[in-house]
Image (cartoon, rainbow, N blue to C red):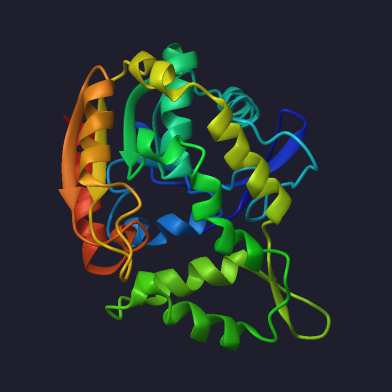
Length: 281
């Protein structure tokens, strides 16, 4: 994927602009991810008939990493500024996990900018105060050097997310884009733990019981109900259905995989098909 840069809200964001369709789908990744998280969807035809814009949110990927400014309002201001800079009055807004929450936030607060909502595995259940402790182990790895990329990949492949041996070049590219090689050959994540923790606190501080019902644009919630090893799914079936009920105009589409693997491998075409059917309908 190509990399472009754009100035918005006082920072520089990295993004990819692919496809030439009349409709524009703007996709935002998860909490500690980057735009390469959608590489599997692109490989399986997401940009066929669509213009797709993928962005590295502030503090992630190749975008700027300011010391402050990680509330939902800050992220929303970044995206609105980016839409203005690209001369896009309104788009089909979408995202995975944190990006899905940001999609609903933008729609609720700036409905004139959002035609439709594509929400991947995100819901009210992921906004309570217990979320920070659930992701604490992930935060602890950020900012810590790992001797080599190969050692990092070996450890990641053994994680519960990939226990069924779901692994391909798109997953590996996503992690390569996340890691930066240090002068001594070690690698470190591009994400800062304090920035990610601030983003989570920003989510927790917002009143999602009132925000989600205000996200009135037509929506699809694409949900992966697979367990993560011995752990339950990030978004339970009950949690997904609750979010669908809160959204004024939302379809529900189940797909295979879990919170991470749903956008890769054999699961990716299911997600692409669900998006295309919703967007083109």
